[in-house]
Image (cartoon, rainbow, N blue to C red; front, side, top):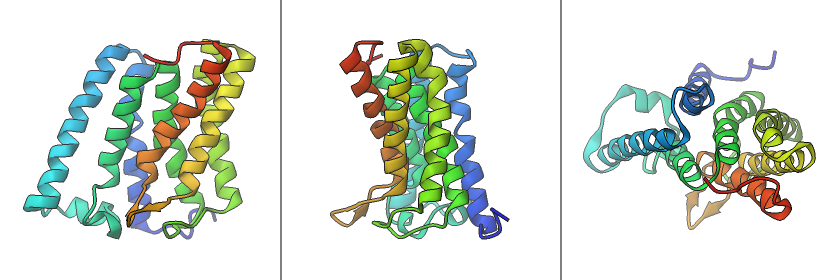
Length: 209
């Protein structure tokens, strides 16, 4: 069974991670405009920054943090906050057809990848099967945004570039100066840059918001 190796706590982490899909869906489903979505992301990022400041420097003894954070997050910014920060950054910089799928790649692709593969140490890559699943999910997520915006050829190539970027960011967590570069931080910008590079080269669609 695919999920047999997944602990209850890890499954809870992945479900919470996937719940972040609700934020980009506010825009995708038309509840807010792109400009309004940027304001929403700035607000939730501010709340996350405040909570992390209190947790790391003042002390915030909530059981939910004990259950949902990993050991290396005990003294570093937690993944949920990194998700908020990275998503906010791409939303403020890039056009909707670039940034929205980048956010969804993180909230949909990454949990699926995590459930299929075992957790690895920083610096270790994931198995090819897991990377393939991540790429397929990210490609499916990005095509509905990029093809209508840039056409079948340019949009398709941009979607592939975005999915590849997200897969690389998900599959390998480098350690820089002793700090683990979490994929919650890297997936949105890396995938956005991949798609943006193709769109800029082909001039098939706007890159920036």
